[in-house]
Image (cartoon, rainbow, N blue to C red; front, side):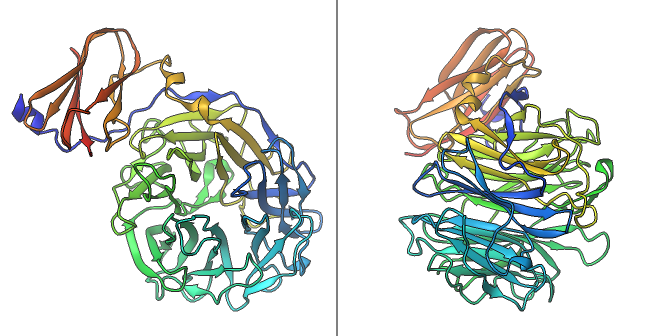
Length: 534
């Protein structure tokens, strides 16, 4: 027994799926109109979780006028008002790709690329988006693309209140660029290239901040030859408020899905990396996560899958990828456009399009949730979210938009996506009660295999929870061992009917260290590692 158990000291992090569940939530348009809306972004006031601000790329197909939508809710997302046009001058130079923020004083800040004059421009509003300042020219010497914005709201940070804006310059090998404001958007710093002399052309640019005031930016590098695939991810860190950057041009190889999806009328898609930081103060506080869409690179299959990687040391090293979507690998089903949010419990929530339950020309909207740092996932489809993706009339060739949005606010998740249920693409919202996603509510779901899940939390002190699935009625043993194979505790030793179960393990009387837990039935056995840190 001891020798056999020692073979399992390196834990197996195989991913098992709970039965997929449909979320019985209603979807609705936040601003019904005759104007096309796509690429939603969303933020919440840092001190008032009832005040929400959403923007989107807007296109009036009757006259080809582009802008950014301004959609505001003051009652937690139940009711919305606003406009399909940001009225900050120069009004004819709004080209979309909005980045947005709300400051503690309630000021709205919005960035966009230029339509007539190349560059990156910003505006601010002091009356909930009704009126906007004239444009501040952050740069007119660079052709900006995919601007994203993040605000540092941490009381622990020396740069609290600073807003960061990052984008990709479409010339000179398309480096990733960042600027910041210290006066709520009235003026901006001179843009800094965060990855000078990139080896290849870069795309994307995602920015996030941590409690200690650090700023993180990631992007992807494109192969120099056709079909111009996203070949690797780059990453940069600033510890001095965006003035200087420590850059790694390649933190991991990837095979992003930039290109088109033939089964969905040839719409353009991407696998752009998106970065998020756990700032909830829990056991994974400071962990950095990057989500991508990839294929033909493990653990992704030969069809597009959502992959997640994490760093526990401030971005110096990165984990191997885990596959978020839990449908059968290589089944020809497509997942794309993931949006990652970390809620105040430290749980990971990822919204994405998914056609596993549809014909190949259609898609549903899915939500995946992990409470253990991405080791295991629960998956939910959003009720009545199915539609047929297609290029937007009047937009660029094969354009559907490049991303969707997810916002975590208290015990709510705000899922926002673009779809043409009404005949044109508009932004749709479903408000999900996070309490409806708990494990306890899913223990009676159908079970299709035996499984032992990673304990959570892990590491832990002094107690942790272990979940396991029983495919059919069996005599079940669940035991704890030390690394020498000595039995420490028996948590379960009885007949269990089919189902998913939880059991707590209290290690108050044990010293810190690595322990093993093993599930044994007549037809199945598996061992995993748990870590006690006191």
